[in-house]
Image 1 (cartoon, one colour):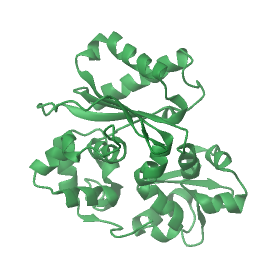
Image 2 (cartoon, rainbow, N blue to C red):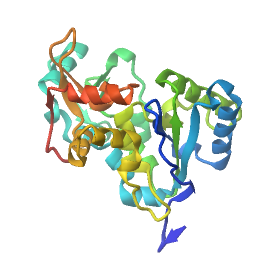
Image 3 (tube, one colour):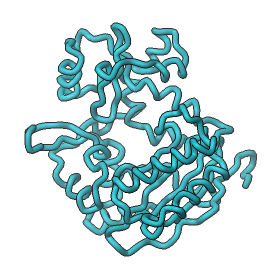
Image 4 (tube, rainbow, N blue to C red):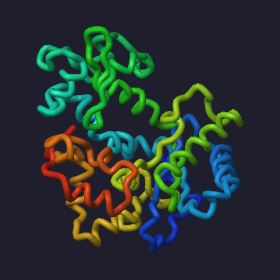
Length: 316
């Protein structure tokens, strides 16, 4: 469909009615530009249909294609990676005391003395392209993941979110994304196993590059809060309008627990929280990581247990 010179989303399967069972979760799966296509979508449904042990526990409830120019104009990808962009552009100035301590402990160097670069600065300083930076291999010991950020040591430099420039560049006009929502009663482990089988099958059929990492083929919601974040970015009607967040089961669940829209969206926009752990009286984690693979009830309790929320008011 066209709107002026801009194609609008093609909604093949509109979002269906909600499940009334607490065990159901609505999990977004979207195929990155490299793997989009009708053949891929057909192969996915074929694999699900052949797996008798999961077929009655999973249902496709939404299927749409988002055109590249629509994604670009609405800044879907930039909004989705907002926190990573914030750190990528601001560099070490945003690091909390917790992050500084984790950095020094992991790399064995003083945080203050370290030459820490955001990925865009790294491209200029190291004279690397987006893809060169993305493909820069280092040993596992030279990688640190903290508060949703990835820091990679390369010689005497420490690069924040090395993947962001390539991710943003790949999602430009002409590169579409296929978006699916599966309503499922599968456990997180069962769903991950299903996605792994899907990727394996697609590789066997030559529909995706066998050498391409898992994360470059699929994205899927790893927890309840990520389901809402994915809904904010990838859930549209045929006219290019966002569908109401109330149609997402976890968003509706949180509202019924007394959280209003402002509270929920604030948790997504500034997702780094402070928690008290059993072994560590103070640690920081994004709400996405903290609620990884949790049920709706568990994810709600995780948010309720947070002691503080960080970086509130910081803008890109």
